[in-house]
Image 1 (cartoon, one colour):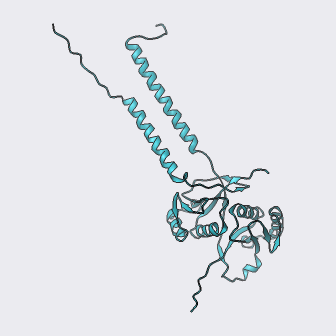
Image 2 (image 1 turned 90 degrees about the vertical axis):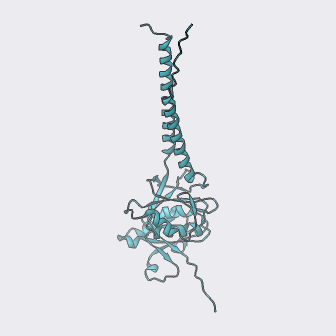
Length: 146
Length: 135
């Protein structure tokens, strides 16, 4: 049987098979395109916040913990202002002798206008230094004046 | 003269129909996926040490206008703890991941409250960030 353009009934059959194969190839193409688009990976940082402390709660332990305060652009460690890279090294030095996880708690207090981009960098530096981030959230109290 | 009547054979195009059905399934699949969160506008913050995110049942997004979305639906902060708890159900530790997609310029007044509520609900937070670019 010689190869070449088929004629008659054979040609119709060949066209039918080609049509089927083209459809199959097209569908496979779409399938893999969809798979590739949904497999777009996201990157994230896991964070454990053990408990949230409120300002209203006076505690004795509070004074023993390291405190990191943030404003819109600045960061301070126990009241001393410093840049973020320096915070990491100083905090690591403070926490190096502390073995228990509860001793590694770092209270993070942020001003209400602190942007998330700044906050995530500071908390990231705390975690890299070995600290456990605990948020100190200001609680709005409603006081009824008679 | 007698004409022979030709029998008309109409065969439904099964192959073509199957293709159309398959394409429709794919179309609705993509549509369903896109409806989730693609309309929410937010930009991730940059941070170092980010890892590839695991699959999570709960996703919380804060958009450019500080609106909060739970799995693509806009919610308020007031009852967020209960909503997250309901979504997480009785999932064991390790399977309680909550993706936090917070717009980079969101203020602490919004995101700290949100973090506190997720923590209260027993969620394991994963901040979705972008790898820090060298300056």
